[in-house]
Length: 358
Image (tube, rainbow, N blue to C red; front, side, top):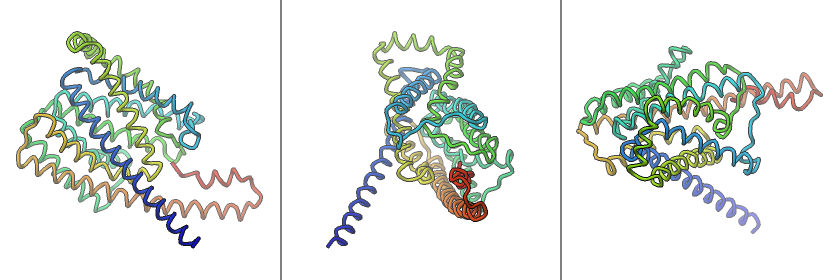
């Protein structure tokens, strides 16, 4: 009976875990789509100041991370101290990539539809692959090359045949994709084998303020401060303040729920959901915003989403295989060191086991 009770309890725990993970996935996808729709609405109408609003999102993320640092249990988040030059380098790279990636992406929403924005953003695996090859000489596997080729065809077909195509919006959104890929590749290149483990809330604590220092002058130079004044006169201070607070809350809670989901599963599995989130955002945009579409554009979107999901799947398989291989090698090396240097300090052995984990 005790054995049967233990089995039943284990099955119940497994079911609860599955329900919780599915709920968190639904929340993360909902926040991702909702945040994109919210930004498109704000930047197209009530507050056409995307760079300034992006800076306010960073402020909210910084304040939220400070609260978590002080109030959350250590098992959920413990601040990583800055103790090496590699950490400083990574922290300084993140704001540059963020300004190009998120700043330009939000700016593009003023000029292009949300559907085209998401379709162009789905081109990121191709941009990352090309950048990694040019900078690091890194090549892709055959399955990933095929999915990337299909992704290129789908994005080109979907964008070029769309009645809503806007060249300026396309260039700005393309710049954001380039910024994302450069940030990822350059960070990996400059880090080398250095062990730099930054929690997402470490990034919010350390990298948001430098981003704000760049975003606010950029916003001022574009004349957004005058636009904000006009929006307050037209919509009212309460409405504009409410939109800013809502956007900042979206930005922080999205990071929060994503972190919880990754802690319960893995960043690898979360990455696979990118295709689903992108497809949901495109589909939702047609129900909310006045957008035009052609049969070829629809075909391009479908091809791109299937290719994007396939690329995410093959990337997941490669990462899981590399992780398993790395774990075996680390354990073998740790065992060999313990055999040869019996009696050495335990902290040295633990450092050896984790010396290649990023």
